Image: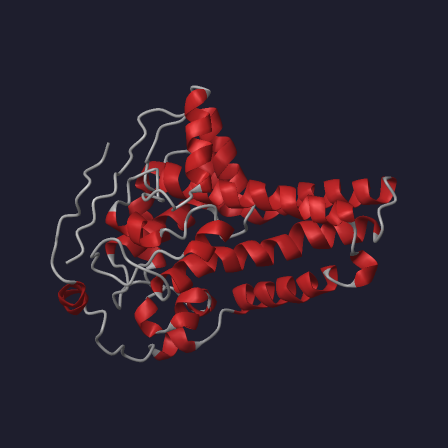
Length: 306
């Protein structure tokens, strides 16, 4: 059980002023204004390919099923594996379970697990401050996706925040070769679509299962950085702009209860009030019943709002 009262009870405005959240941001340095060719090109290709998936010629119930199953695998891998398990160590799982969950999260193609964890931990240290790589103080679109299209100076230093993962050869391999995970997904979807003579064929299943799925997962994940720092309500006076946003919580399996999470980063449970349904938390409770989740850290709701 984690503490149920955040460390400070100062007013929200005082905390924001202290954190420099309301201060104007300096323009990006010239070297950072350039768009990264690789990342920008990859995102453009994925978004264009995702639109092709929605053409009538590629529509099928099997495509929807492939999208739904892979969406559940990928989002749960991000929320349960990359985020609550290895970023915050909010519970302990057997190593084989941990590796499966991290593998599922790496299917999201949001870089490798070590980089993902390092940047996330950095975000918690400097949330909504100028040093935050997706600083909400720079605006909605910057925190949503634009930040990743530019050089991230902190990335070279932030790997020190994930030193616990650097000793694991499996995580190091995933960090370097994460894009290769899409190959078996591609082959499985394509050959099933061809053999089963699905409407739209194997290409249709691939379009639904890879680019469309990735694009939706991207934007759902990015909404946690942007929308939940813009819309919603606050249970706690955290020194940042984090908010609880119900519709992001639905899409992201509970990550939308973001103000709760920033108040208690190590809590495995993000939805703390009775109406804050947290799908990922339900999965953690299921793992606990199976004996696969132990030493679960859980916060309780006690508001400190003034």
